[in-house]
Length: 131
Ligand code: AMP
Image 1: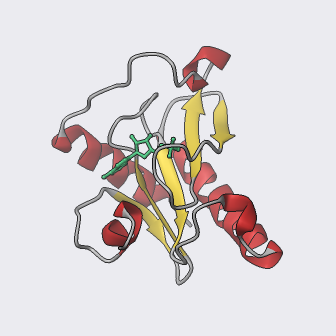
Image 2: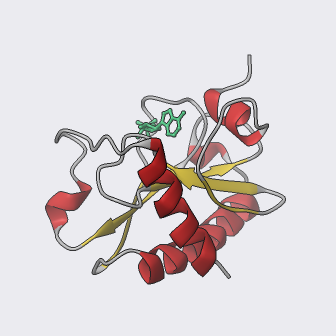
């Protein structure tokens, strides 16, 4: 059965898209730890990120770098933090999180619950900065 992220990429489940190319898809996390928290996902469905081929992983990181630049331009923050957890959804993904201090990256805190309108507005701002 397709993962929830494959279903998002296929458009079967709605998402707030930030960027896309032929190999990767970036969209807002629905329960962000910080405003603009974005997930970068390979269209190839692989559970564990370090099972990706080296060249795919390299291109995924290059794609993430461009998404991070767009986030940095759109969201007030000091920089974009990057983490890989992958315990909840078995489809490789990178978390890109706008941060101003280290606790902004802490996943143990209560997550934010932005409305669909807020998510749409944030995604639009990042999308407009993506080059
Ligand atoms: P993890 O697999 O531990 O890296 O966590 C998966 C992340 O995916 C969590 O931060 C969830 O909030 C996020 N997530 C799960 N379902 C969706 C969805 N339908 N749209 C956007 N983000 C999601």
